[in-house]
Length: 315
Image (cartoon, rainbow, N blue to C red; front, top):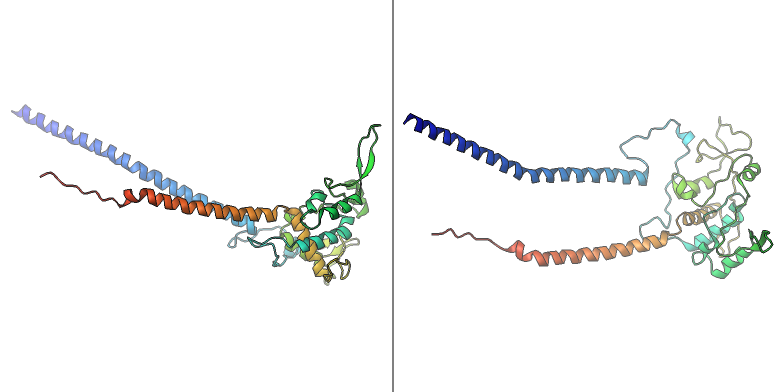
């Protein structure tokens, strides 16, 4: 009788242990999806936070609550330019093509003497600022070296639409020799290559002033507070009435700077207008598809989501 009682007690203990282990396994398997979901939420939130910080830094240069660390003084870094209301800065705004045409005239008559525009071909101007015939006429005014011919010799020919705009100097050494050792930068991507973009270039062109008291600029340099260090090799090049616009626009210094900066902004992003047009089309199409998807989802799932399950226990 004693052995029977001990056997029953041992069986109860074994059964309770089995149920405990089964419950633990069930609890662990049921908790696993919740843990996976929590980890996914944390990872998603982290990715969104890091992406937001990276995008803000890309747009504005630094975070508003983080101080900028620099080994140079503000004067050595250059005066920060003001933010100007450019007509093409909005999400749906395009370039002022009349300003691009005037800006090219300023570049051709003033800037092209020292600065190249290597990434822009004559054909890029067609339909943007000039007609085909106008661009062909301008290209034919320039002689390009081509060849070899049947005798193996190089020859000169008039320019054509496929040619790129000619540089002012044959090589870097010639450019430095003509500018006191300074190398005039190529202007194809100058707007994208400078912090501040169009605002910086516009401020630089209009920023030539006499050096303040106590500031000495060595011979051959010019004082400009917007240029890092304050001393720039390029002298002031824009003056009132320097260019006579074909459309009669008053050629003030600020107007000349505004037009040439607009032209250089287009040169840095020739696809600007088309990109915004395609972006608007993509937003419209994706918004329409999203609305249709939501409607189809609600239509297909309405039966499942609105059904009610009723349990009738057996009598």
